[in-house]
Image (cartoon, rainbow, N blue to C red):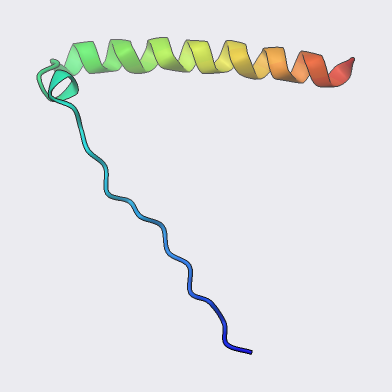
Length: 50
């Protein structure tokens, strides 16, 4: 049987909004998104415990 080759398409399009951010703005946005992700993860884990 022939094996299929899988690959990940890692082409990413960075929006102009992100390109125009300063380094500090990018870091602040990353921190904001990580905070949201952490809260969502905790919410999911709490639901699994029930």
